[in-house]
Length: 382
Image (cartoon, rainbow, N blue to C red; front, side, top):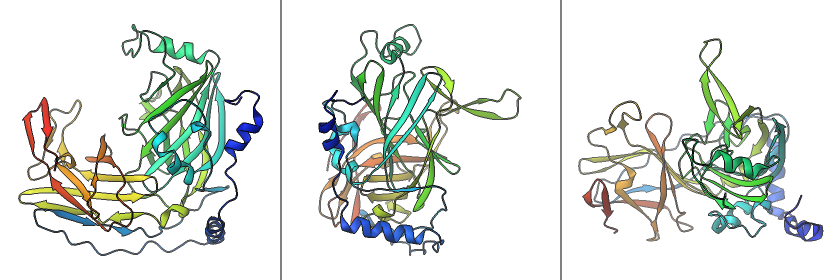
């Protein structure tokens, strides 16, 4: 089923990415020629000097390739091409960076049906900092089933009226895909920054876009598993925990798998070395600040203790949160952060930033003063 009914020629022209640029073909040939052999591990880079002044700066350096992970089956490169999710009148919060996704993506056309529900991944767009998934969920009477799952009386209602055509938050029973690479699972944080956008194509089909932040370094090539949901519960035999998936409140298995090659994005990635930025008695433990074709991500160990069910959340003496700094690139532009994505493994927090200007070689972290109460703090913008 297309979004244009019988206008197949129109749909075909929209989805045709055109000829592949010669430089992309050349990079792909070089990448695939190198796959049978393992590359040497990425050489260690010297730690950058921390400026102990009123403005602490972190220099950016171009990322080097990492060791290739052997993968079975086809490895899909990130190339230029249209993404069907955007070929519609339905507006989403990702529309402003549509061109970014369509410059680096792969058409995968993965699909699996179980328990009467079909889970599909049409396109993926991946680099060092983000895993983006575009696809569909289909089931007979899908809109009515989601409406029922999100009506008052279930203890977690979002809407009592008609299910809207589009939304940027997760409904009950809506897929919130996660990605597994080896032993690592990405996208478990149910925050606004690990976002889900969707719209209804018809009463039986919902189209979704999932944007996931990555907190460590992915290999040049790898196999990733895509699951529409991910949860654990005590195993029936009492031996630890078991993982399970649900869609529309029904358990099943919709696991999809594909090989990914992100070497085409590596030349444009810039990373700041892990370092502790010091201002007076305050320290910011920066584990990663990376600028890639798909966006900018900071990973900070904010040294919090406690959490939900663990007592009060307390920050260790001497450490600060990235929320207490503004970031400016070397071209003088302020890099606004979108929203923290919450804690990941351990005490690390992820932040998505708007991208800096092209050609910048350093970032400056400026302390921001706060006024007011804990209930209503107002930042004094620099």
